[in-house]
Length: 234
Image (cartoon, rainbow, N blue to C red; front, side, top):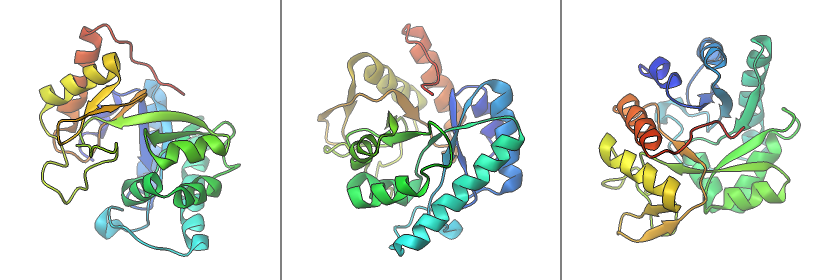
């Protein structure tokens, strides 16, 4: 995306598309190098191999097909990272697949099992208050709980579907305020105004949101101004 280089100067970790919903060997190699040079932790970001819909359409695939898609995507990034003297530290599922795994333990288990053994000490970056967290912990993975800075939440702690009004947030100042509240109080506001408790230690900013760079800058500045330290959890 156009803002990737700028974002890599702001964030502490980068989830890199692995050739499924987006990306190819060239973009993976370029992003791995840029992240490595900036000390940014590298994560694998696989999703449904559905470029037409950017991996945001829910699909029902045979388990062996989904397993092959995920393992192949992550292996590609791991091999490129190794060739560049870097390490893939974590896995974060993308788009519709991430949402399905957040709701259905069986989907989460299949996804996480598909990458077992590819990288020593691979962590799982998972949306807090979801099936992903429970399944990953049960399978013995280190889990980093994540909140979404630029997405609206349902009262149950899951994300408002992108098809719904207000699902994607765009105001950097508002998002920065939400980030500080999360870091200080462990709270997120749902779309109906209710409070969601969260133990999230990582904030997602989507690189394809038009305001991504402005949002990232505002969030980082607000956290630093509030005396909240920022560091990769991997």
